[in-house]
Image (cartoon, rainbow, N blue to C red; front, side):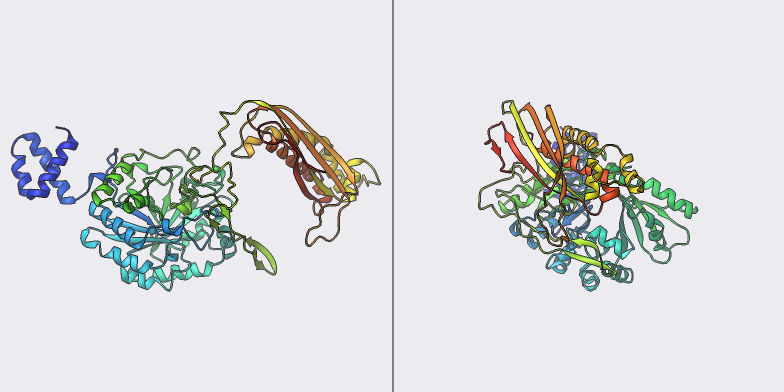
Length: 604
């Protein structure tokens, strides 16, 4: 008899006859006795096999995302262009959340953490906490929440009264100005008030501060964060910068936990290893004499997959078994189809069985099809197209009346497009994808693009050798030391054209037949006037690039890339003499031929 079958049999006997029935059945054979003992332990612990994966990891920790919305725009969490929010009726209702939480707790989950988005922006959060607290007789031991703290300090007492036991606050800098750079929003003071309220709250079992460290941005503040543990019973946890869709992750910006520990050890040589909590993601350290502790979450440099006990429920009802795995299964759809708890548990079990032994290496993690961090919850298959709502006016934070950072507010909608047009690089599931050209015939294709850089008279004279150029001028000498402007820009344009697919993520690599680039100095060509222009420049350099190939897709992007790189190179070559005055613009596709779409030539 297989283990799975015998385990089912013993579970059935236990449900019908109790432990006495198990003891009677176990007297038949030694093997039956051993199997009975295992079944008795399972029956007493009430831990469902559905929450045990193929690597024998028991998942007793559930993270529930309550919303996809957030009142901050942290760059490592949310793409700069914003995210498409799920329609309201796709988000789990309070009753659906509690039903799933009840099922997970009855199956063995002892710890629930509420996340987002930002959980405090969900209406009725206090009621959700109160209803979760009613699951304690079923085995729930703790209710935690991870929050940015912006809207927390006044509501925290009510959350604690309703059952909140653990709180993690996210704060990546102690500098209020840097805070606005990292979050694209104000609110540093509000977070500090929430931190203070949490530390002085009697009902919380633990308060932790999560700090994502990014090289060149906030790594200089590590020791300042360590000082917070001197007098406060707080755990400061340093988190490695992790790759998610849209956050422009760069390995060079990640500071390994081992390096942070070295920095702290040099300042505090007496630092010692502290006991870790079971299945904890952080390696804990303690500085003798300090009230608090330190933790290092090294998801990238030294993963902890072997002890992972976490499952995630997204705001729109998908179960994710790994933060870095794009695969998801919809429990929401199953519930709304009328699935019983037993059927839901079977779906959960299949998802858990599909969990990998460990996630991919830091440079191989899927950041194309996986969700942005804020949507762990995220973009799900939609029938409709994607359109953006009108952008609100930009606001700026002023430092001594100087704009420090523009805050662009954008919200995305999932309404269907009235025109019926769709983006070719967005798949039917709403995710970015390459266009499949495998069924197309290879044909001769060409494209011509052009653009201009407008320059002052001094730069024009330097490029053309006309006029009176002061050869003794230091800036003129610096510009000339870089070489011939037009030749360098022409070479750069050709090289840029050949690297288009490396620069533009969803472009196909193309075998280019020919690239022709011309840069022409011009006079009396005026740029289109823009608000705030003080005076029109009369001199320019026009860059024209023609690209041809024998292929299955067009070369418009290659032509546009050539022109863009060529003009940027001119700017770089001339910035010593004209950096403040130059303007690049009017980059267009002037001509296109070949392929199924209609050939065209833009009027001059």
